[in-house]
Length: 140
Image 1 (cartoon, rainbow, N blue to C red):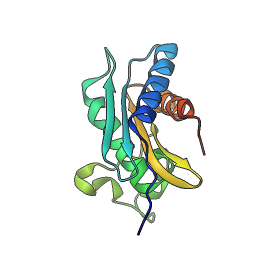
Image 2: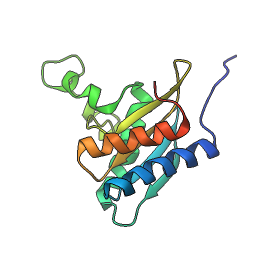
Image 3: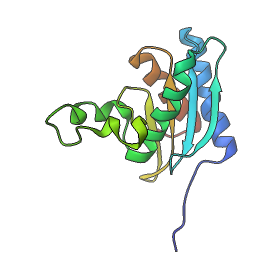
Image 4: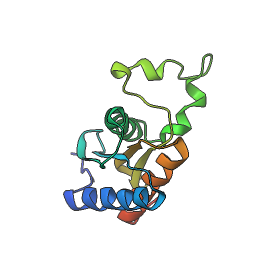
């Protein structure tokens, strides 16, 4: 029997609110998605002014981060032609994203969920995603 650890609704709300506060601080309306450890969507916010296509991208960044247990930008080099996971971005219906802004959430070395953010530059998306994880009180 397995015992799973995962985010609960209060965790999701804290993460979205923390990410939203950072997005407001930097003046970039974002799309923010949070998934559980199995990449299932638990919460989503499209801030007023968040880019419409960024809704799907944010969800897919969280999906990728939870599923691979890595920050999305850490996958970029390995997905280039000739590298070990070339073609990853065309798998799972094209849902795997290798642009910054997806961050897995760990507790005691175990992934319990992920956050994905989109609408800004990759650097802005990553900063907002990290703020969401920090609002939860963990960033491994």
